[in-house]
Length: 327
Image: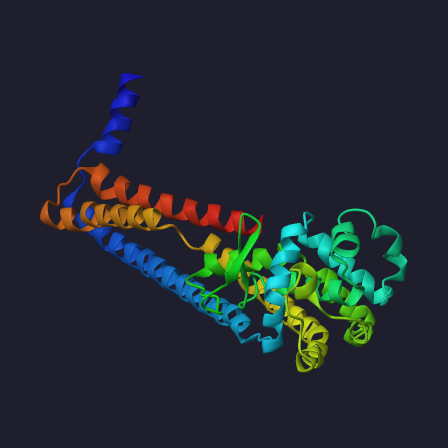
């Protein structure tokens, strides 16, 4: 047993012949240059693709700042903020009730519900009609983030408009947060109604012959709208449908880019791993190439096994990476 152990120890740690050490140094130089060249090319290629996808996603997301509303929408800012102060339900429920007007433009089917919360305060107490109620629903949905021109609320109370009517995307995380806000608002409820029934079915459901006097109803003794403003209100339903479809379309366009971004991030090695691999490669370079030329009768562990361990680590990493992607 001792003889076998001694032979094994000699095989691992004994001194190599000078000719063998120099021959192995040439082999190590070739293998290391191939592996390091492949690794650098791979990292550069993946990171270039990540940069391109991230840039593309930022450009697509910034299209949200091209969505504009007519100035008349500013007339709904304060009523929209007041509407939100009373509304205790979710954005999903706002869209569900707004979507019901595609099937029932006059709102006659929900008249029986108007005497109960959450509608009682709007119809019984404040005295809104269905057209005014729809205008408030629209304002509450689109004059807020993730749209660029948006109301600001604190602790449920309206405090004003965002000073800068633009959304700044600093990085891919900001894009993901914005898209999550779009998805959480579930604009697909409105978009599906537009796709199924068309925007005209919604636009034609507004009765402009009825009183539109939101300020006087939310704040008693407030001045009403001028006749010119009342005419401008008619562009709102069409703009609402168009802009909701636009923002939802931007979110859908980002879906593929964000999935590809995360796929490429999975392929890309982390920075600590890159540093660790470079350190191992440098150690292998010195032990397998530099040392044998300086000291031909070098310890066999340095000239053979240190570089071999690095090659094994490199190949195992590749196998694990490929397996995680395929799996």
